[in-house]
Length: 495
Image 1 (cartoon, rainbow, N blue to C red):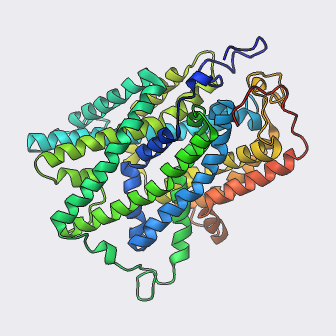
Image 2 (image 1 turned 30 degrees about the horizontal axis):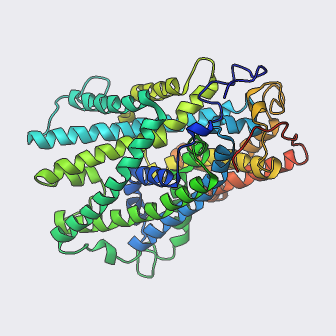
Image 3 (image 1 turned 180 degrees about the horizontal axis):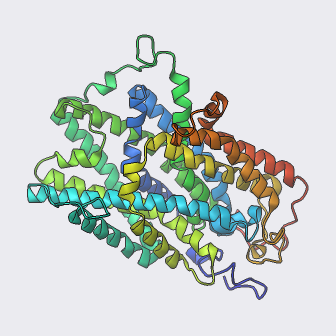
């Protein structure tokens, strides 16, 4: 797309422009492969551990993971529709609701969360290289910790090596990422079955965890407390993919048809996520027999294998982490940073910024200092991103009736300029969705500093994503009722 003469160059660049017909090359199987590639990751593998440790049985944990992903699939499909219809990324779609300038707020929030994830996953990848080298050497490598860093020189070099591997894909762009996801997804599925066969043969079965009863039934240590654990767990599982529920247009804008993005995502997300949870439970159950304790960390498990198995397992985990990190945590912030200053920041430059932030944030320190990863981190940012999703969905479906004037999204003086580029209704609705969850978050993150938070707020916080998306959507719908301008001269779209 060439810019319209009236287009504001501070709102447009070639990467943010609607995709052309030639760029729409993604079929349903590309989306399915994308999700299989992202689902098969270390953090997703270990999700079941938190649920079983909270008292759930293996079957309850797997069902909770599956249900959460079936729920989060709905906003994925709803928000993804706009990407396919108009070929625009999330950061541009947000302008319709938040304003041409106000959209920088949700874009920046999404980008910051993704940078945190990108750094953490890069550390995981570097740790795998470190483990692999130690196994090949036959002894632990490294030495004294470096002053100010808290890790040894070998760990730092492995982290930088994995960072550099990913940087190659940033340089080579979106198509390189699509090919990586498509080609590695079948390999990951195959490896899952190989792993199942390996543990079954080694352990002579699938171990005791599968037979362990729920701790919420009579006689268990948490009898009668199932629902008080289930709801925050469900919210946390929804929060795991809450970031992708927002920036999914960054991918669906390359879809050939709406059917491709709907079928691909439906096939690729809920069922594979549930199956991965089941795989994690089965394999971990077998490790109790093999090693005398439950090993939920696949890197730890891989390091205990012998012969060629350890080499193959760690290499597969490395490829897996690269593909997940690029798709889930690089594409979105790259577009988001580009939208902050399109004249100066391209998609590729946005990727460089993301990688740079991940490099300097020292993610190993975040992991050391972060307590309650599942119930503080995941629920915490779901409370922040849920309200944004609520505003976008209500705006696109109820206010706009899926009709957007695409050319106006790139103009400050257009119908999405609102007041100085900001839509007050979207800001108020976003704040209304976030505020009720703040007391509960402070109590969860800093219990000693905020011990007096009422039971009502802490209970509300367990439903953070649901509360945020509902309140923000309701407030935005009321404030915008009858105020939507018609979609003037909408660009040719793909329904």
